[in-house]
Image 1 (cartoon, rainbow over the protein chains, first blue to last red):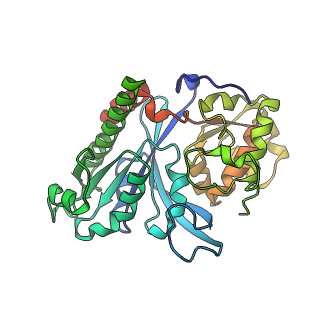
Image 2: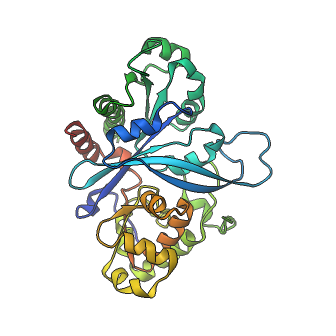
Image 3: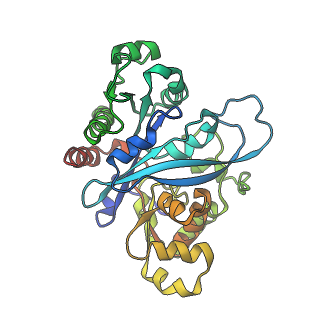
Length: 200
Length: 146
């Protein structure tokens, strides 16, 4: 095992640079639509046969038995420039599949938590997960059919989102809106990186 | 999938920041030991992710090496299919899983073997990609101009 240089990311100037963000939220909130709005390819579905030990985020009580489950996960890909490839991964919607989020979030820059303001409780598992692991995220309220049922401020208050986390409105079907939402996340990621660079 | 290696002393090292023992995949552990011996260049590309070098992420991109292209006819099943799909353009672990209709965990294991054998080259950013101001700035500029 070689000693690896601390210089970040420059070694692969000649190869592709894949980066990843995660799109989370409740079932039917529009995650795959969101991914598809920006992706160069129609969203693909990958299957993950997962063996769950009930550790980590899967906090159900009945976890002593080992179970194997198959979950489907949709994702898309965006060629950002001649090297950077941005992958957008939708989380499996059911929170009981939370155990695979550790694998998914590993190496991710951050997450977008999509919210249907009529069912805000569906976003609780995602919010809890990202908050507890200090993963940078933004909350994006999906405008269904162009309609906002609650203001972003109402959603912020209802979800007890801390002030430093952006809450934005988005339209999962609209490329421009999705792009803006991703940019708002990347801004959080950048601010965090800058703050960290300053303290070092 | 049986988490071989759960008792392995290296298991603790693989993903330091996760709060659970990850069910380690066999190939990932083996690869940790063999990478240096094989001189696999891909490991230079994982940056700070030294201990996790055997673990391919969902977004890790793979491309056949010269040796991989030569070995193609001698290989079978998933090994051959993965190499064939990565023959010219790099593809991510997730894309391979989707295209081959093979669970992502299987692709990770098989592809990690191929990487350790020098048949595939792996591209993934360093573990501290989230601290890389230059890369993030470049990403933002790229997304803005999409």
